[in-house]
Length: 228
Image (cartoon, rainbow, N blue to C red; front, side, top):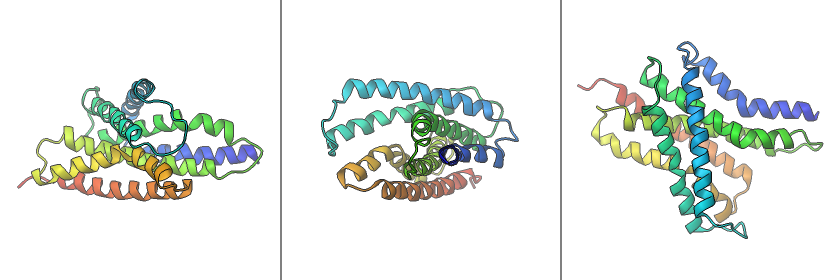
């Protein structure tokens, strides 16, 4: 039963990444190399964030919400945006369209995040003797993170690669990117500041990720239209 529970949670956590790659044109255009490069950039970015967090943040003695600490975390979190910028604009990619490029980068980014933050807890905890919903919720969280990563990559693609986008959309694109980039701090406030339980926080994250994905898709579709 414990092994069965582990595999169920692992499939829920990592399966959607494989399904997304196989079910979209990414597999047809062989963009796996782009996703691997993006994953490597994510790991380097995570290391830089870890060093910054260890340098500038003090160890809290309580779980209470500290606005100053969370503001620093949010600012350090924008290292992800810098890493995503590098992955989208500086890495050499095969001759693929902008549409496939941001999807491949976002997919690799999200997969690396899931491996780094969820594989070890899943391996240690999901094989325990007692059933717990924590790792199922962790899998749902990984799915929300996949959607958010794809949304941020799409918005980044519009910000840095799309030159002829409508000027009226630029503030909306940057606002949406800022919301997605600061999502970890928003979720931390919900948990620690408002005292939300984990299922409620993940439900909010899933809803927000779907909403941001819908907005990002509409913005990308509008910017793809030929200008008259």
